[in-house]
Image 1 (cartoon, rainbow, N blue to C red):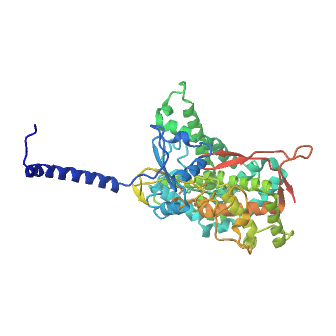
Image 2 (cartoon, rainbow, N blue to C red):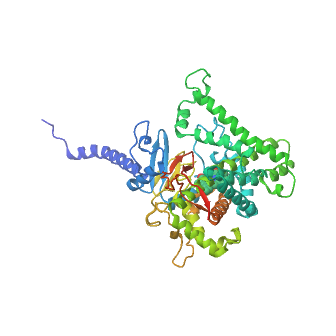
Image 3 (cartoon, rainbow, N blue to C red):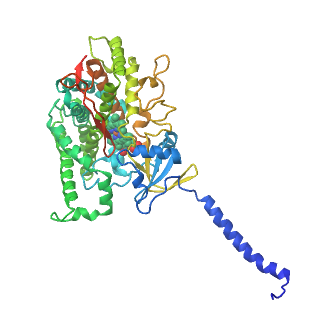
Length: 508
Ligand code: HEM
C-alpha cells in the first residue's frame, strides 16, 4: 500500500523539479531552433562523404541534378572537405560578390606546391602575396589599360588564320599559340613566331603535362599520404615524387626564361607599357631589402598570365569552331552580316564591333553554350556565415555551378532548349542585342573574378570575326568526299575543359 501523502507536499516537491526539467527542455529546443542547419544535400557516407555519387568527368552535371533535389544551395562532403554548391546566379552574387570579404579565399590543394604551381596566384590564399600579384596584374589588364593592346591582338588573329589555312589539322595548336603570343607580348614584350616558337614551347612543355597532373585524385592522395613525396627513389610509390620534381623544373623554367628575356630587352617605348618592363623600372626605386621579394611577386604575376591564357581562350575558340561545324546556318548568317557591313575589300577591325550585333551574339552564345570553366575556380570561406537561414562553416569550399539550370547557363526559362547553339537568343525582335551577357557569369565573381576578362574578350572577338570573314569551318571529309563522323570529346582539367574534333578550314 502506498501511504497517503498530503497533496500540497507533492506539489511542493514536484514543482521545482518540473521547473528545472521544463527550463532545460526549453533551452534545448531553443538551442536547436537558434542554431541554423547546414544547407540541404545528399546523405554522406562515413569517411567518403558524397564522393562516390559525383560524376568525376563532368561534376557540374551531378551538381545540376542535385539542384532539382535539394535547391539552390547544396551542402556536400567530398571526403573530409565540406563544400557548398551554389546553383543560382542570385545567390552567387549575394555570397561571392556582396560578401566577398569572407568568400575570397581558395581551398587548399595538396598538389599545387609539390608540382610547382604555387607560382599561380589564381590558387593563392586570400592574403598579402595574392593582393600584390593581383594589383600588378590589374595595372596591365584593367580595361583602360588593355585597349592599347587591341591592334596587336588583331594582328595576331590574322596571323592565326593564316596558320589555319596553311595547316588546318593543327587548329588547336594555332589557337594556343594565338592566345599565348598575346599574353607574352603584353607581359614580356616578347613577339612570338607564328609557329614553332621556342618560348611558346617552354610554356607548352610546362603546362601540357603539368596541368594534366593536377588531378583531384592526386590531390587527395597527397593530402592523405604526404609522406609519398619523401619516399626514396627505389621505393614503390615514389613515381609521384619524380613527376612532381619534373613538373616543378618545367614550371620554374616557364617562370624564369621569358622573364630573363624581358629583363634583357628593356628598350623602346612600347616595351615600357608591358607588365614586366614597367614594373622592373618601378623596382629600381625600391629599397634593396624588399626588391627580391617584389621581383618574385612580379615573376609570379607574369607567369600567371601564361597559365590563365593557356586553356581558356583556346578552349573557347574550340567551342566556337565546334558550333560553326555543327550549325552551318549560324556561320552563314554571321558571314552575311560581315559581308554586308564591311564588304570584301578589307578585314574586320575593332572599330566595326558595334556594327556587328550578330557576330556579338555568336560570341555570347559561345560563352554560354560551353563555358570553359563550368565550376569556375572554387572559393573558400574564411569565417562562419549564415545565408538565408543556413549555416555555412568557415573553411568550406564554395563552388559556383555555372552550368546550373537555375538562372545560369542551362536555365530553360532564360535559355529555351539550352543545349542548342542559338545566338538569336541574345537579340530582340529588332535585331538589337539584349542586356543578357553571359560574360557576367563565365568570368567568375567578386574579388577573385577573372582579371584577364577584357583581354580575353578582345582576343576571342578578334579571332572569331577574322575566321568568319576569311574561312569556312566545316567537318573533315574522307577521300570519297563523305563527311567523317566525329564525337566531340570533353576533357576535364583543373579548371577548364576542352574537346577535340576534326575541323579543316577553307577560304570562302
Ligand atoms: C575565355 C577566357 C577566360 C575565361 C572564361 C576565364 C574565366 C575565369 C574564371 C571563371 C576565373 C575564376 C573566378 C573566380 O574565382 O570567381 C578566372 C580567374 C582568373 N583568370 Fe581567367 N578566364 C579567361 C581568360 C583569362 C586570361 C586570358 C587570363 C590572363 C591574361 C586570365 C587570368 C585569370 C587570373 C589571373 C585569375 C585568378 C584571379 C584571382 O584568383 O584573383 N583569364 N578566370
